[in-house]
Length: 138
Image (cartoon, rainbow, N blue to C red; front, side, top):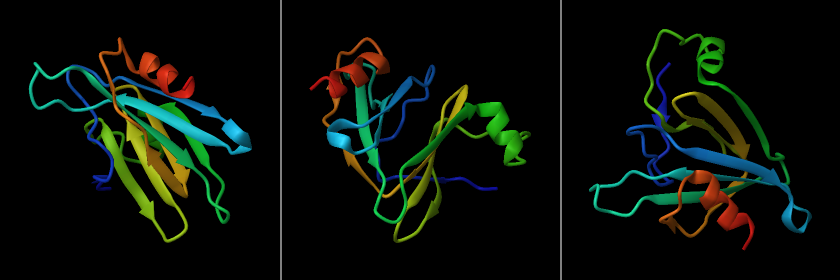
């Protein structure tokens, strides 16, 4: 199995570890999944930056996501012996939905969505949880 990087979203930081958080909620009655993660920096002097993405379902396909351990996910996909870098991967793309895989050092988050919005980047947050709270509270 070859995972194709999903390059439409900001690249995830993988060194020294992957910092990501997510929350499923229904602002204004529409179910969404908001994911925040540290983004890759070109230079260490650049402030730590967190991307926030809000995933939504569509009329044809409702929003769906599954979070499991990285090892369990790779075993289920029968690629447990393979090593994949942390990051965002495209599993399937159709005209009605996309299936993405957010793979971290310890977790796999598979997201089936119809659309997404890239929210404003957050700077100088302590971690992805603080960045996520900043976005859901505004």
